[in-house]
Image 1: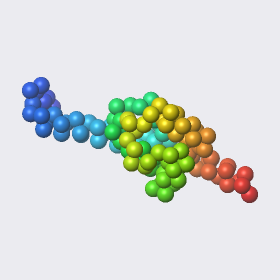
Image 2 (image 1 turned 90 degrees about the vertical axis):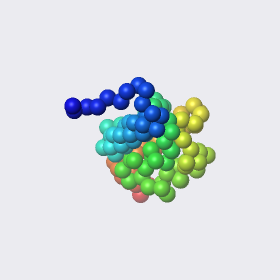
Image 3 (image 1 turned 90 degrees about the horizontal axis):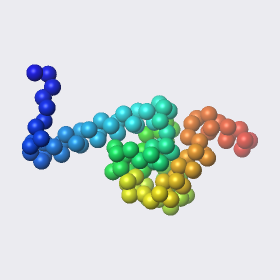
Length: 120
């Protein structure tokens, strides 16, 4: 009796709880991948996987290393997107603009060092 399968006629609150747990676990895995650098924010925003549709854009941005609330605000203000905007409600134009900005600026520490050296 290892795995207990939820019957199809399970009460609505149990199905909702099961769905919420699936979303939470999928988002946690995605955030780990972004923090490790194996997944990118630009690709995630363009591909729009199911687990990020109801996620706020600032939550996704802050899963990157060295990204906090102030940095997220600055970036999102530059393209006119509120930080609490849900990714699934972003227009195609907004998603493309954000992805282009993330790709152009680079998100890694190496890119940050390159920009600092150029500024000197």
